[in-house]
Length: 319
Length: 141
Image 1 (tube, each protein chain N blue to C red):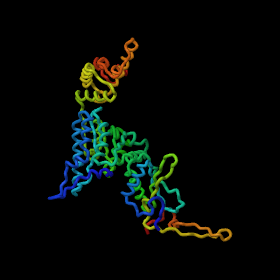
Image 2: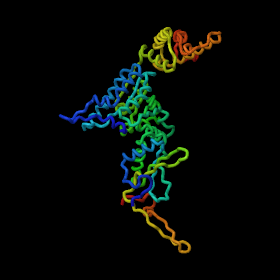
Image 3: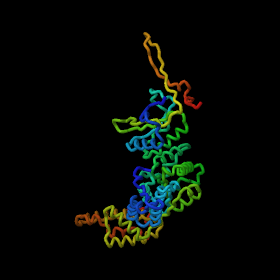
Image 4: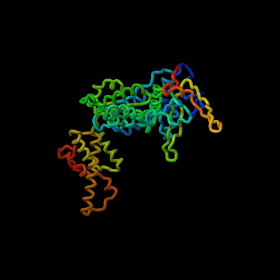
């Protein structure tokens, strides 16, 4: 463990009776409360995910308390699998996970290596193993995040090199649990197929976390936060328009939760720019700060979603 | 004869944990580590065999230690060293290099004298181990 992990050593009570550990003090000293509060604040919804992170945090603390009393049980396995529909925050949470685990003192370094199939699987015989080992070496001490992990296994091609990468991954996940936390992410149905064909993987992953879809209120909150970071704003009319938009869009195929929201906002920004230009060319007054930051209701209402057409894939990037 | 080459060579053997801490230090300084081995520890033998390529982009000692241990398993009776290379302009060289594995018995060197022109004495040192062909030196007998 890292040097700052030693500050997490719990106070040992040896005054009277059998030795005990003050869990409250341990919790306070570790600063985990801040991490969890931060997660609660920054991520909208995702209740099962937050609950699981809380459980992991509590487990690691108890584990540390047990260690001080000499009750050994070996390091817990923390490999995880995030599954859920597109745009439900799997990648965002994974990025935060490295920080959480580091603050908990479970991994030595706050770093995350994000890879996909391309980075692990080679192009010719004998290329895969060194490539995968190289990635694993780079991720040592931190978190290895494999996005779209189901692509590693291609059942249609029995000579696919993905299998080799999977075997090396499994071996490292088993033997170097102290050095590396592996997080897989992917769409739920495809991950299910992936695990069915690689049963060894399922059993080596302790935490299977399913990301639920967002409801409309949560999506609106997400949109609000995205706009805040981009320095845009909605007024009462455009907020109502966006609520209508979400109600329509959520029922359409290919709805990708927060990602669809982001795309909708990006298109609204394009329309806003277009509108401002049209106004200026028609001899309107100069655009001030308020006009430049406001997404108006008409920018949102112009979306094809309201005319019953699907928003994705768009044949015309603006409408 | 205990060979003293590179950093820490006058200290007792480093444990794996200490090796890990030294590698961590090197990585923190932004140096890249590599592993090399040889069975000819002559001081003028600058070019040891490379165990794989130098490891760039690493953040943690575990990756380097993994290679050190792989090299130890393959060559348990060879000298193995870890080098830390600094790529900063002006240095562009090894900043640290230390032995992490050595054979159980090190027979040492012998001094050879030669009569040169005009009976001038010329000296050379030679590893006893290099009497054996490469690959058979330091094998347990």
